[in-house]
Amino acid sequence: MQIKKHYFWVIFTFCSLNVQAFQLDTDLSIMHDNNVSVAESNQDIFSDTALDLSLIGSQSFRLNPQSSLSIKAKLERMEFARFNDLSNTTLALGATYRIQPVVGFYQPWFALNVGAEKLYYDQSELRDGARFNVNAAVHQRLTERLSTNVGAAYEKRIADNADVFAWQ
Image (cartoon, rainbow, N blue to C red; front, side):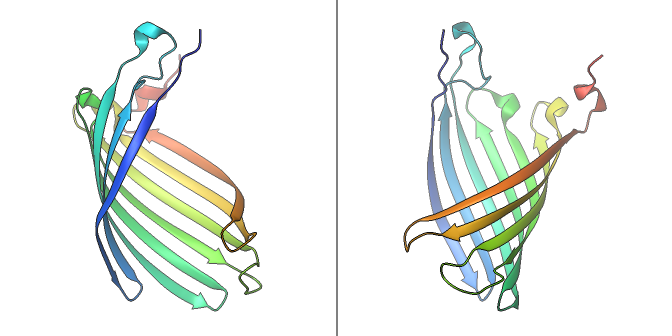
């Protein structure tokens, strides 16, 4: 038996402010998922729709002609229509360092990103916690309209309730 996971997103950016190197964005998206629980059988399949509203602030600093540093903060609210326990608020902070050793449109550039998120779930304190991530990537423009990248990432999730991940 094959279980399929279907979902869709509709994303609206309804406010964007860009003053010099500071940028403030708001995003509104609607997501529908027919397998919220990542079901293994037909009887486990459920559908839900979520509304996601984000406020994102970022500041970029040009360090020299070849490199830059970007700092980002995000406040996000995701509200599920049916599964209220999954509704959550997230506060995220991150930084990205980019360098292009040889400046040029078709020259590769490298990026290192670190981030941290704090998650607060409405009616499910068991899910509250933090997520930390680090990723590195190399990007290459192939043509004016086509580019490629390859990278590696590491993510760690820490629950506020230490018993959540205790497998004994």
